[in-house]
Length: 242
Image (cartoon, rainbow, N blue to C red; front, side):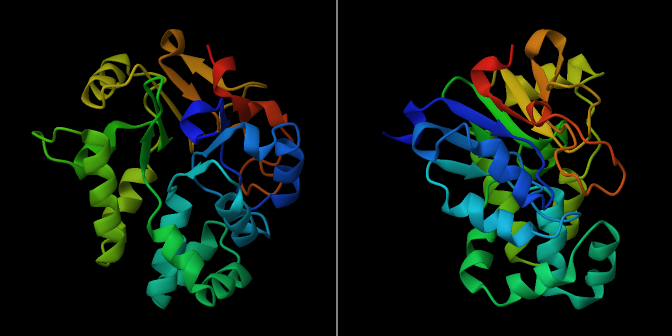
């Protein structure tokens, strides 16, 4: 069955916790779900590259770029960025593994920044409208334009601009007008994102379900949030998000 005909499973920021990812996805067979990762599979935990490979090889899966993937690719290209990347949780052995795996590099460079699902749900890494910086006002398809520009920035040594967009703090929980404009610009009815941890036992739902945060601090190795949160705060079927 094609991915677009399958129920959707949303996975929040994994941050290198591959063992817990195995546990979280066990109830959701790959051939029965379209799995969508919101980005930040790497850093903090010891198995960021392992998480990338696992997500890449899982059938019917979409993996979005997060700011931590951008930082890792930036460090791979420019060794002067390694110190910064490690300061935000980067693991040097992961960078060495990525450096020796050109196929994984190619795959990672091709990851989209946004995906709009068949039910008009937009999925992105952070809950912010700064993605609009990556497109022109007259673009006929904002999602496609953002993804094209994000790829160009990665390929042409302009990671700084993409980092700024993807690392912006979530604003959709508080600023309904900006959320509404972004949904209109992307022809979407709601947006799902991660990046800024919420404090709920389930995904945080704002504005009657128009914005949904799935960063429930999934990784047990998060540098800033040492609590152990329920898997259900970060991994959830899309149909359960109301």
